Image (spheres, rainbow, N blue to C red):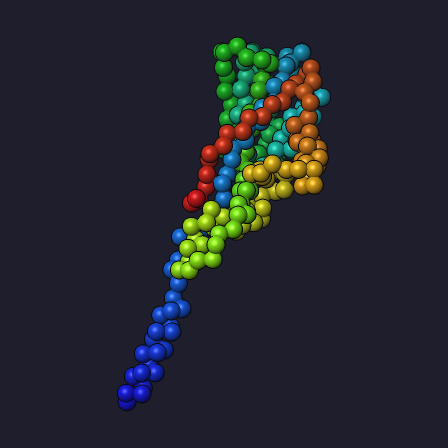
Length: 209
């Protein structure tokens, strides 16, 4: 009987030792909002065929349509008369009605119509590579890179490659030229008929840090 109690006690200690605490820092994805703007100047009170193609190309390069929010702002009577055409054009590009907002502004701005697109991109964190001296009692959880690799991998899995924002400086060996080429493709140089610019607003985070 005493032997059985001893064996049960040992088994209980072993089982208790296998119990682990939940992860204090779960993998989280930082999300950054990116705003792109296309400015259209109308020559003959309506959109030209070339400008229609530019709008289609501009929307197509913003990524998956379900993640976009579009605002159409007119700054003149000419621009206001083309909002409905732009609205229908966005619908054909796969943008849902609830993702589109139209607005007439009396403020003086460049161009007759501005197409403002807001999208979200996953940010890949720059995980620290420094090593800590060997310790006990799971003190590695206090390391700055704890859980970072999982978060970085998760961000890369849920995002399109061109939508990723990498949180470290890229060198020539890490695809710097490829990234520059991709940026040039996404935001080509502006011309006289229309112009594009983009603004990134950081510190919008989803999940726990």
